[in-house]
Length: 420
Picture (tube, rainbow, N blue to C red):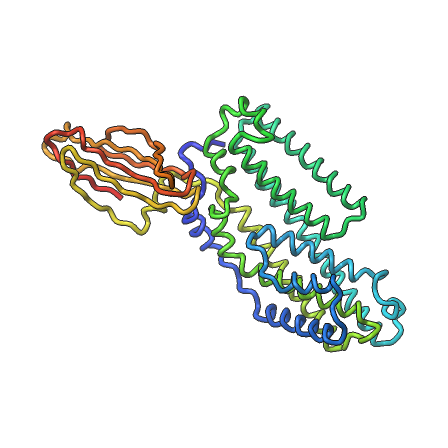
């Protein structure tokens, strides 16, 4: 596939894309159920103080969820596995294993239904994560040269994934907890991001491939280097869809905390009929809403653009602006300084000279430079003389960027420049 004339997606463009995919609101009952479960947990704690492990669970349920979409996905997957561990029939209180009373049998039936729903949701989430990872990698690979260079990258990924699975197997074999395993899985996910960025920069584990990467579109390397930056295009996704996911994360943490406390104290205080109904309702609405969210976000991801035309990227920066005019006297320059807070922002320009009778004499020098916090200057766009120009670039550093129109070479003629 060709990337000619394309640039990586911008935040403004992605925001407009997401406008076409409004996320249905999470029902108010989700927050209410989480609060009810937290209140039930507090009652159990009042009757029997928390153990150190339970204190840790309570603290985890109280903190603000992580900001990243994928980190929350992993957190939800971890919590589902932890809850399924608690629901395992062999780990339930003896009275529930034996179904000593009709009330106990009813509780068991409810717990069995919760277990079934969570197993189905966990399987769906695992499939979603695998599909999403493959979609991203395969999309990137469609823009790679379809020869040995692409094969080398695929082989590198396969080796890396085998090594990662071996690390997970080693943790399990050593008796590691579910939390230990997911801490490793998240670390590996971050390692994948680093590897993707290294491919974009042709560094790190990919430095041996640098000499083979001739022919890889620069726009692709730019994209995979910056796509997951904290303030990059994906931040729009987090702002748009993160709050709903955070609400579901809070609910599953509340489910786990209450279930742990109620089963641990079952000999002291049996689970009441109303309380088990709250737990069941929470699991039902959690799995339903998380399933909807996973389906929705999967559709958004698979259709999301990676690249857009340079014209569209420039339109993003011009959308709310109007052309301005300035007259630059002979022997003078005109400067515009832009303050950029985050890397991988786009700076675009569009200017032309208002031509007069002596049009053949009318051009203007133009260059762009970066000014570091220590006031050192780095040339971004070399000096050239133009009658008109359009352009844009992706910033490498945060800081100040200076656009300079230079009429210093002119002895007699002022220049009228229209720009944005």
